[in-house]
Figure (cartoon, rainbow, N blue to C red):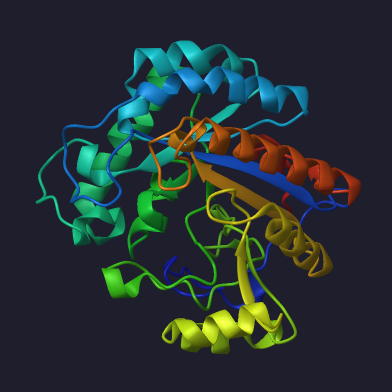
Length: 333
């Protein structure tokens, strides 16, 4: 197995295996980031952190259910004393974990032009991507007292150099591949051919990829990687396929995915024997008005209902919560 870019789909011999008894697990990840206008151009200034006051409720929610949430934090969060006060004790006690999420437009050094293309960190020159990653890793280690072991590129923006840089920094896991999605039309990566199963990104098995969980559901789901990109170009066709129960793409996120859809997706993931299911959402969705998915207090409660129902259903299906620490200890090298 040769070293490969994270942009390339892996070969079959790269698939990761886990220790006997690991079974199927679920990892809850939160892209923990500043508030900004999702419909406006990217900018270095003008963001907010008001939703941080909603984090204690969420952390308590997780602890009550035996879940160790993984906060993938970017520069504004990593350098926020409020975030450190809210999450620090839980992280140091092992009741929560922190990882790295790089939003290059707000992360020093600010040597690049702010643009859509440069919002994908993997598109930056290697020295600049390295410096941004290093500064963020060091800020997290200094301010939260732990060395982060998992990375997610903001906007899922991996590049040809990212895997090597993560290895240099001693990061054990990447979770940036949003399998079954193609961002190339907007200057981003194409993950439409990537698998959902965890896999090793390199020959020496030092960097594990945990793709975000997005499954195809329906009678034609085995043809999803071929048919869905075609149907997406003709929205009416995609809508017909979905309503007819023929083909639907389901991501395990409360943002834009109904509870019923998520439960169908979980059934597919379990049937496909995925060892690790990834739940994900953005931290500003914990408060009203900061993302397109949560407009008011009722939407916040709906998000908690989604999470509670999904976690309960996973428990009934025998899928237990896991953590980054447990995954790194259980994967077979």
